[in-house]
Each structure stands twice: as C-alpha cells, then as structure tokens.
Length: 396
Image (cartoon, rainbow, N blue to C red):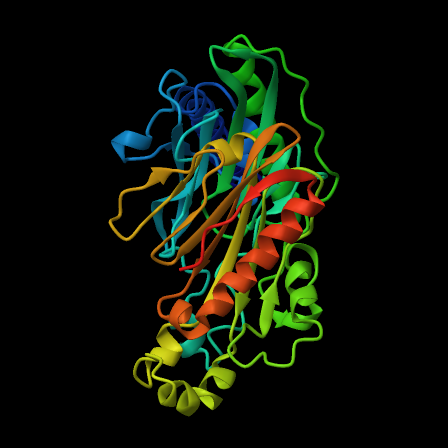
C-alpha cells in the first residue's frame, strides 16, 4: 500500500513538474517572439531574458510610444518589462531598453545646466556632503572610444558605415539595464546586445560595416570625487590649471574624471566642497555675492561639468538656453547662454564642441574666473586631441 501511495505521489509530482516545465517553455517561447517584434529583431531574445538573474516572461512596455522600435523613424526605442515574483505576487517591472540612432542626429547631446550631476536629497539623508558622490558614474570609453562608451547601466556601441548611406554615416545602439545596476558580466552582455543591434541596423540600411571590437572587461566606474589637485583622466587638465595658483578660494576643490581615449566623448565633474563653501560664506556675502539661504548649501551644490564631443557627436550637439528651446551649435561657433559656455574647433577634419555647464549662482561666485577655467579646459583638450581653429566665447 505504501509503495502504491508513493508511486501515485511520484506520478502527481512528476506531472506538476512536467506541467511547470512546459509552462515555462511556453512563456519563454512567447517572450522570444515579443522581444523580436518589440525591438525590430535587433537583439538575441535569450540574452535579454538572461539579464537580472533570468526571466521567463518578458514583453513590451505598456507605454505605447515605447512598445515597438521603428527603424524608419530613428531615433526610436523599445522598452521591455519582465514578470517576476514580489511579496507573493506576480508583478511586471521594467527590464531592458534598446535605443537606436542614425548619425548624425540633431539633438543627440544637449548642454543643459538642469542636468545636475548630484542628488542632494539622497546624500543629505545619509548625512554625507552632497558633493561627495555624483548620482551616476561618468561615461567611460569602450577601448579607445571608437566603438562607443558605457556608464553604470547603459552601453552604447557605434557601427560606422564604410560609405555614407542616404546621409547616414553610422548607427548607434544603446542597451540599458532598466532593473538597476548590472554586474560586470551583465554589462558585457549589454555591450554584446548593443553591438549586434548597431550592426544589424546598419546592414538593413545598406551600410557596409566592420563590427567594432569590444574590450574584454567593463568595470564599473567610480562615483566618488577626490581632491581636485589630484585629478586624473578627463580632469587632469584642471589639476594642471590649479598647479602653482595661490588664490583657489572660490574654485572647485573636488574632481571626478573618466579614463581618456583617442576617440570618443569626454566629461569631467568639478565641485566646491560644502564645508569649504560654508567657510567662505561670510566673505562672499561681504563681496555682494548672492549665496542663498542656509539650506541652499545642501540643496544647491556648486559644480562645473565639462563636455567634449567630436565628429558625429559634435554635429548633433545643441545648447539648452534659459528659454528652454535647444539650438544647434554650428561649426566655428562659440558663446555663452545662461549657465552654459561652449566653444568649437576642427579635429582631423571633423567638428568638435567643447562645453561647460555650471550650477545656479556658481557662475556669479566665480565671476571672471569662470572664463579662465573654461579657456584652460578648451585649450588643453583641443591641443591634446590635435584640433585646430579653436573658437572661444568672448568676455562677458
């Protein structure tokens, strides 16, 4: 009797196991189809489902504009959601995003002072200085930068066309982990997904491409700022600017850079430590500088951020003025608009845009020194990259 009961139980259990396996197999099959349809068959569905520990049920976003990527209307994107168990319930959470650009693309980059590198609320609650860490690591180059770049959650890969196809010189695909910070292994998977998507998009447009080589490791970049005089990589120019200067009172004393590359974009974040700012508060007030109230020191950190774009990236760069209407930056153009400074140059026959954004009121604190800092940045960067014809904004 016991043997019979055990046999029946085993059959029942085996039946449920088989049913569960079949259901999982069916869900994965439906998910593969949904991923292909949503992302224009540019990515490997199984690679997408393996992200974040693996998911059986993956489908398009509920947001209509993000449900399907259309290669005839670039830039465009697809966003996928995944079903998973949470507190005993099945919920659908954002899982993965893929965006594709055909370059050159106007509005690809925007110099916007509202793009604050810090999140004061988080660090203030943690009892830290708001200028200790940036919200997101700066983009780092993929190898020498010619293949693209990566940040904490996104890897962007560019596939250049051997010959321009209908005015398009390259296709760029950006694969994003939408569930949080991916591991180094998952970041490599994102790079592979982006590379495949960029190459497929280019080939469908009639471009002959050589698939870009990807580095073997994509280590996460740091978020913590260090002493400005020890700035490295994309902030090394500022360390040189400070060297030998006697009066550094109002200048940024913290820096966070990213590795430099022969190609690709660059960015550097500089900030004035909040304690330093508090220490010079009385002198700033005496000089008639608008510094804001006591809480302003914790909610409005003083920072500068630089941007260097080259080639197609420069051709698609705009400036976001106070009027909130972005305008393109033409070759040979330079200027200042509210909290933005920008210059232009020519590098290896292609355009370059060098920009700097500043925090609200920090431009008034720096005064003429802001122009000194920007000139040092633009001059060093254009010289290092072999650029000519640097055009700087005139004095204010």
